[in-house]
Structure formats: structure tokens, C-alpha cells
Image 1 (tube, one colour):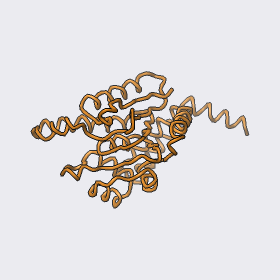
Image 2 (cartoon, one colour):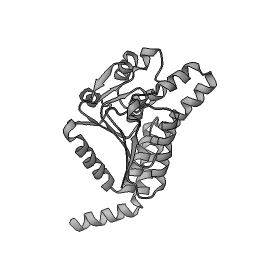
Image 3 (cartoon, helix red, strand yellow):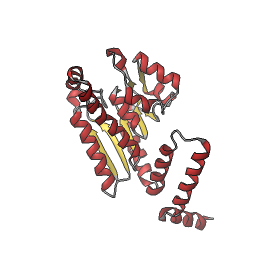
Image 4 (cartoon, one colour):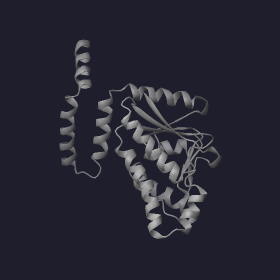
Amino acid sequence: MIFRIVLDRPEKKNALDRESILRIRTMLGEAQRDGVSRVIVVSGEGKDFCSGADLSELRRIRDSGALDNFDDARILGEMFQEMRRHPLPIVAAVRGRALAGGCGLATACDVVLASDTAQFGYPEVNIGFVPAMVMAILRRSIGEKQAFDLLTTGRMVRAAEAVAMGLINAAYPDDSFERQVEEYLERMAARPASAVQLTKRLLYHMDGMGFDAAIDSGAQMNAIARMTAECRQGIDRFLKKE
């Protein structure tokens, strides 16, 4: 089953505010608990994926003190952490623009699929702001010099360049985008759930590990995977083919 999270504020270019962030976090929890979902897809209603922070949020940031701003930032940061720790694979389907926090939301997903006219960028520097939390995600996705360029110039990149630098996984023609995204989601949902979930957990668990520790963690996960019913069934099917 494919669990769908749709950013549904097209009149605001799906800009993020406190309510929409909390809604995404609630839906992530629902997908984890329902027992049938195999993959999550995040998309935006209308022309754009997500334009970043809502104007009302920017006004509140400007007028708030340090503690209020820290509390507000923490809510967004916790969403990114929950996405990374979520057992299910999360796919972003990006049409139009994914900017600032919206670009962070897309790249916080495990896989990013975009239409070939999509645009990505971190324009925060243009208003004297630092894209601090999304930087942790970006730095794990692309090279240091590419990240520096994007963060300090605020320039936007189209899908083809984003693919080339490793910011996103694939770009599809606009006229076949929906179909190709659905085909990808169906392939992902058809994979053995335990193997996909264990792979995601191990991949991100290895962040910051030395080589020996990563190999040891891999050995432990290898042993766990061998004990799952899906692995044993898969081995039986393979041996029958032989």
C-alpha cells in the first residue's frame, strides 16, 4: 500500500507553517502504525511542491524572541528527524518549485523524483537567514563545494542539474511524470518490507561511523535479516529456480 501525504495549500504555494508541519508529522505516525503501508509519497497540490516558510511565519520569526524562535525551529527539526528514523521509505514527488524549507522537506525524503521543469534552491541567504537545519540534510546529499555554492548564492537549479549533483534521484518528462512516479512507488511497495526497512535503518545508522564499526553493524543487521520470514521465503524461491 502507498501512503500519500499531500501538501494542500496551493494558494500559498504549499508554504510551510506550524500547522502544516504538525500535520505532516501526524501523518507520518499514521503511516507507521497502520500495518499495511509499504512506502510514503510526499507531493504538493497545484503548481509548486513547497515554497518554504509561509509569510505569516516569517513575520512571526521577525517579531519573536530567541526562545520562541528556538521552539519553532525545533518543530521543523523534529519532523526531519522523524522522516530519517521512519521505518518506511519516503519518496518526494516534486513538480514546480521546492525552495528553502520546501527543498529541505524534499531532500529529507529517502528518494526525490522530479518533473524535468522542477526547480530546487535555498534562497534564505537573500534575506540574511541561514538554512541551518536543512544544511544537515543537504551536506549528506551532495559534495561540500556544491553545497556551499547553493547555500551562499541562493541560486535555483533545475532538475537536470539537481540529478547531476546528486541532490535528487531522477527527473522525468512532465507529460509522463505522474505515471513514472506511480511505477516507481509500485516497485518499491512490492519489495520485501522487512528488507527495505532494515536497509534504511542500517544506512542511516552508519552516519559518522568508522569503517570497522560500520562493518560490525552490518554483520549484526545481516544476521537479523537472515532470520526474517521474507528472507527465508526468498531464499526458498531462489533455490527452487536453481
